[in-house]
Length: 279
Image 1: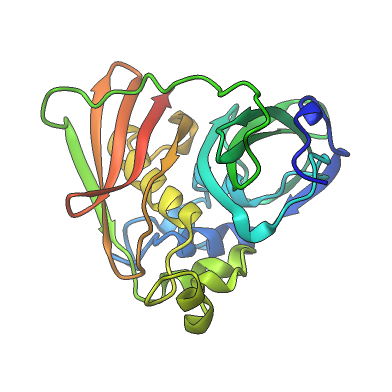
Image 2: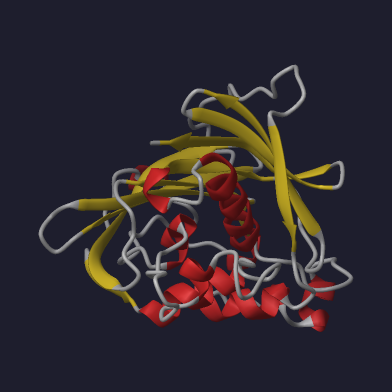
């Protein structure tokens, strides 16, 4: 059957997720931590045994730690799915290693006429019931719209009419996708040249969530003094593909504890409508 609009509110089975100190270091390396200064900057994220430097976790790692059992919202061609947007809210700093309980639900399904937009929300709590993080992903599924349903809310995000307050970014490595895929996303679009060619790309592209993670590093170091405990929430829309080896620059406009941002490759926006909050 196609996408089922009546699946809104469907809840998947709550299940345990876990991660190790090694997983946390691998994620950090996967989003470029330590590349510019392997023995200095970001050692708290890339090592676990550096003298007087306790290991910490990049907050965006929440997107790869699991989301519990998936609720049923219909059947569709996986090749038609596009990760449209991603948001995370951290209720506390993530530990370097641990376990938790995750549960996902279908938060909304919108009719975009030529596509359906499925919003999946995952809530993660400790075994004692303490909220840890909440993530929300918008999935565009082409060919599944047109049933006459709610189109969904319009975006109210606007780029401020002034120069950015900060611009910070990092060069990605030419092998960045090969490293990032070890966090769990083995889609050959990011590693197999013949597969990426079928999708219309001359070379494998970088994972969108890797762009998300590199962006999160820039926001963390620029706006939170590199302190993950101050990282409250981050979200926005994926707009254009990134090739491994390209530089990602994050343009930030600050208004108190809220910052709007864009991530760019040169003048091309690749992650748009960004909103970030600090504690």
